[in-house]
Each structure stands twice: as C-alpha cells, then as structure tokens.
Image 1 (cartoon, rainbow over the protein chains, first blue to last red):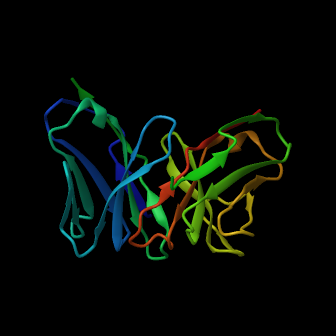
Image 2 (cartoon, rainbow over the protein chains, first blue to last red; image 1 turned 90 degrees about the vertical axis):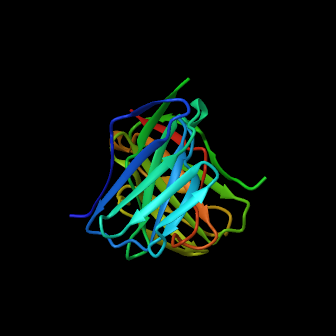
Amino acid sequence: SQKIEQNSEALNIQEGKTATLTCNYTNYSPAYLQWYRQDPGRGPVFLLLIRENEKEKRKERLKVTFDTTLKQSLFHITASQPADSATYLCALVDSSYKLIFGSGTRLLVRP
Amino acid sequence: EAQVTQNPRYLITVTGKKLTVTCSQNMNHEYMSWYRQDPGLGLRQIYYSMNVEVTDKGDVPEGYKVSRKEKRNFPLILESPSPNQTSLYFCASSPFGTGGVEQYFGPGTRLTVT
C-alpha cells in the first residue's frame, strides 16, 4: 500500500542546534515534494518545494534533500530558534497530481 | 493582502442540520481544494476544483458536497452532518493544480457535530 510517514514523536532540541526531520514514502514516485509549517490551530504555510531531479534545496536556514532511491526527504533547520517550534508537514505529489500529506512531526526548540 | 478566508472559524452543530462552510480567495487562483485534518491522520483531501464549474472527488468525499460557480469561492456543504465529520477543515488554493506549486491555506474551521 502507499504510505507517507513522518516521525510521530516530537523532536526536542536545544536552541542553536540543527533540527533534522524525516519524511519516508512507500509505493509513490513523486515528481515533487513539499514541506509546510503548521502552528497550533492555524493553516499550513508553505516552506519549500523540491523536484525529483533536485538533490537539495536551500532557503535561508532551511535545507531540504530528496533521495528518490531511498524514497526519503530530509528537512533541516540550522541554528534553530524557539520561534521554529511548530509541526512540520511533508507532502508529495502523486502520479495523478494529488497532494498527499504526512501526519507531521512536532518540533520543540528549547531556549 | 493575498489570502484565503474561511467562515465560520468555529461551529458546533447537531446531527442532520445542513451547514455550509465558505471559502474565498483573492489571488485569482484556478485551483481550490478542501481538506480535513484529524489527529494522527494528517490532512486528507475531500474535494478539489481545477477551475469554475469543474470539481472532483478527493480521498474522503463521502458526506460532503462542493460547488464552484465563481473563481474566488468554493463552499463546502454538509447536507446531513454526522459526528464522524467532527474535524478541522482547511480550504486551500493555488495558481494551477498541485504539481510544482505551493498551496495557500485558509485559517481553518473547527467543526463539532453532536
């Protein structure tokens, strides 16, 4: 069956460290993968998009990698800050151009 | 300000009482969609619309209806709500579809059906 999985356990890190979140998928061959940030009670906000032919994408303190062989995307936040605390969602575009979301990983950055 | 708006933001209703959640975007986007979000299940698509008068089912369309009479509006209709439709609902839009383009989400509507 098709699955997109993110770690359901919260990631708790110290301010200033690099946060790394994982998104694994099974039985999909996505052309695109996206990452969103969601704060409690609010709508997701787009962060980054990476294409299947791109290995890595950066935006300020954010970096996304996309490994189609491992079927995995990693999302990094360098020099993390308490304001980065939120839930991060990955989403892939499947072959029928539907956007399929993972259930998200909560990040907590301690001051 | 470019945005997606939803109303109401919170709604408590009873089983069987028809309701409509409105969604409007001011970015002239072609594509609009509705999602529901439940703990542990992530965002699941209910319906989507590629353009005016064009709508299609997502992954969980049962018990919902939509219409797209104008480009900016995409209301979600629950003809006979049931408790299993208690959820957090999000409307989203994008310039065109989902491939290679970001989705803009509304603030959400928290619905409770008793």
